[in-house]
Amino acid sequence: MEVGNLNCNGQKLIRKTEQKSTTHPSARIWVMFCPVCQKEYGVNSCDAHHRRCPYHDKGANGEPLI
Image (cartoon, rainbow, N blue to C red; front, side, top):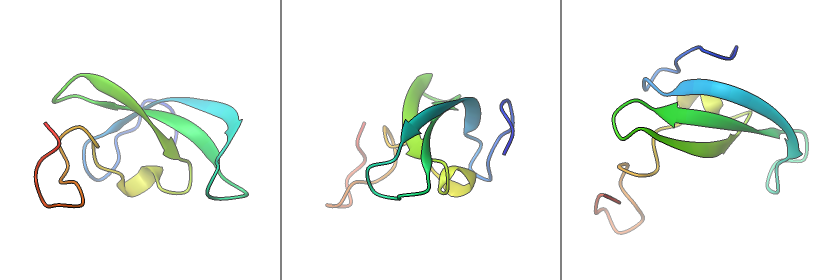
């Protein structure tokens, strides 16, 4: 993905960082933007192409987070 592109869930990649992921040894943290709730959130670079906004995606208990 390139900065400015939308992923398959309409989330926009706004910047790439050099910060290493804590869960994937070869991944970096990228910052995504949700056009619906206007919030930024960090993702692993290897997951950015399919991530959904954590602010209104369903949590572990099945309830929306917002």
